Image: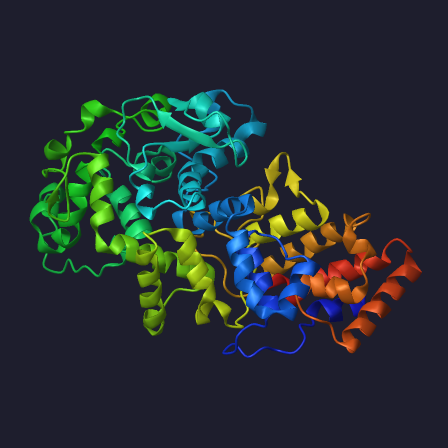
Length: 494
């Protein structure tokens, strides 16, 4: 046991964060970020021999189905739609309790699946807010006014579909999944939705703006204040006209399945009545959601934000002013590639910030896909993927985002995360019999799992651990080694 604890806490020699990762560890990072799996021993051997081949693997892995699937979870960290509770719940559709998790993920992933498919098919980022279709699986096709427009579902049964309730086409801006997460009230009148769109797509958070109400009359009618008070107008002058363009999604009966599932074209012109303004985007008159999407694509913040958001996601940190030269180059590359995300990601992975040897914590969605690929482990309880859900799961405890109470991935090690990763390591080790992990030489095992060559001292420690555990139970020797390697900082960071 002592040897196991010592090995699990060991991390080898600390790396200088200012230096670049060596090619095998860099390939490991890229593989986890693009596919959610570890590179093979052969792939590690190839880039160790020829580091220039790293870029070749980036291009190759961007074209895999695993890239699209991994991107869905990655987008969820920012879009916050993969929540565990919606205003309308599975019972409203007479679903069984065991269908709750699938229902919630289907709803929350609709906009994410559309974005990921646009990226995977190498189409312009503009289509995120202009596409004439959405993506739906069978659950959504059964409960919402949708019809499939593709004969070949892919990506877990998700297929291109269109709404049949006469809503306009504006990509994610006309998806139920987005507006069920960012719902509104009779008095809010879509303002919170505009704030969400601004944060996600423009990197402009209304809630972060400094506003002073020191000179405001506390007895004034709020409905007039938002139109006249300078402090209120600093946000509402741009927010309310955009909210007026979304009145077809203004649901006046809360928690009603027919109200939430359908678009209401008869309400499209109610913005002027209830908000006191006509639809516009920062002074540009528009019609409904369709025009709103087009106006967003013409906003210079839209494409700049796509670059910043992707950099934040793959750097695993918020960009700072010091990053401006690199971000500027990425924006140029993005524009030169007709605003396609794949070339942006490839350029990002060539950059200094991505390749620095600063350790990044493996998020729970990566851990889940890695152990599934390694040993076929599916950690579920009552049909719920434990690393992908809360409160019955452990997604937040493992450092993830639930899109509600926790909206930022964990960036520093913590107790609950360590305990979850320990439990997963134990389950994966127990599932490793009859897999390549069980038969691999110790040196190859470290190379495969950590992307680095072990020292002779580390191999001696591992051999001693395997021997000690085997002396207690012949079946447990290799399992102890695998559990230790999967808890090592070199594995849980990348």
